[in-house]
Amino acid sequence: IVLEDADLDSAIDAALWATFFHAGQACESGTRLFLPDTLHDDVVSKLVEKTKKIRLGDPSEMTSDMGPLINQRQLDRVLGYIEKGKAEGATVATGGKRAEGEGLEKGFYVEPTIFTGVTNDMAIAREEIFGPVLSVLRYKDVDEAIELANQSSYGLGGAVWSRDTQAAWNVARRIRTGTVWINEYHMLNVQAPFGGYKESGLGREFGDEGLEAYTETKTIYLDLVGKREKKVWYDMIARRG
Image (tube, rainbow, N blue to C red; front, side, top):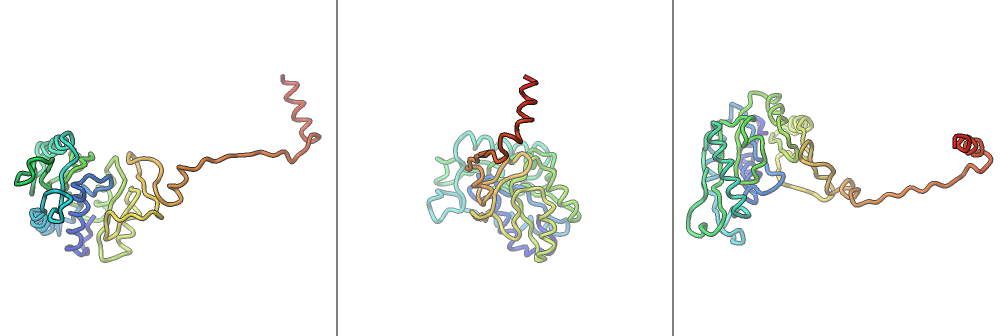
């Protein structure tokens, strides 16, 4: 969620990082971007401009910004979602097909793709694509942004961008997701629990909560009462028998 007072240059870079990191193959990828009506066109224009400069190639090469998808099956799946987005009425602002070019013919590369005109009832906004596809949604005010953000079956990660820390904090508290970054994305710490709400899973990794999943508890009872005090109870059980 980008608030109206956000540092837009930083927010735009973060949106690309949130979506195209590992070609979108990260569980907490930020695949929906909520923009206020007042900033929408300007931000989308800059997003498209920067996205077109992303260099695809061998991820082991320093000259590459984004690598391929893991296999043919995932390539077909991602391309299928892109076609669904088009069919459901979203507009491809950039990308939208398998990437072509020297060195890309042997890999499962997809052009980094941005959709505009997206609504939450579309598959590209509702479902986990696990690929380099960003859906841009508009909002009129902060309450609507939060409502739209929470209209999801998932809730693993999200972010709020604002120069006003308190305003961002207030929004973060209302988002139904296990991790919320403020002016940041993909940053994890082993001391902080990580996990999701809703269909994003149960339990937590990292932190004390993460260790509890590997803990076997044991209960031992010791008699501190003595036979005389327990005799009435035992006699009652014996009579029932």
